[in-house]
Length: 218
Image (cartoon, rainbow, N blue to C red; front, side):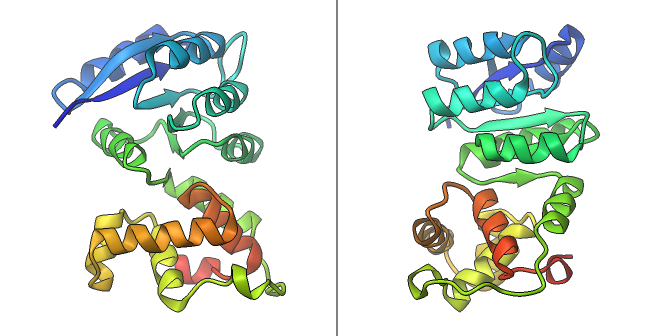
């Protein structure tokens, strides 16, 4: 299996060196390093990595704007946020900018390596603390009326509920006695109905609409 090519953007040299060292022999290859957001955008265009791992607070161009520009210029490249900050203004601005996931720097390198693999497969990854903030923000007591065309099936709801709990497609498939391809088909159906581009977008949409609740996701 080919190595996953990763662009690492963080303004601290020690952090970049540490991550690069710890990801050795994991099937992940750091193909570029950026010390600020402007450099990250330029390297994303020139190197076309498989995944960009992005810090939030960086000079010249911050991680939010860098993520937005990368998704505009290279929409197929997933951006995984790795930050020390869990402030809501960062979280929701980055998700709106198109980030595929948001991790905090208290995770292990093994968890980070798995998250990179997950977003490379098209899955979304949110740190549990980040997911709680997302769920609380979009909690609704009343379910708004929706067009019938926008409604998802019971099985699609089951898949989305497990995705919102942070389960990977393979684990969802095992839990529901489905194939991984069927799970992917259900998620793609949800994306098409709701005109969203990722699991995170779909989860946020479902929380806004009252289709998922915080209690059932805990």
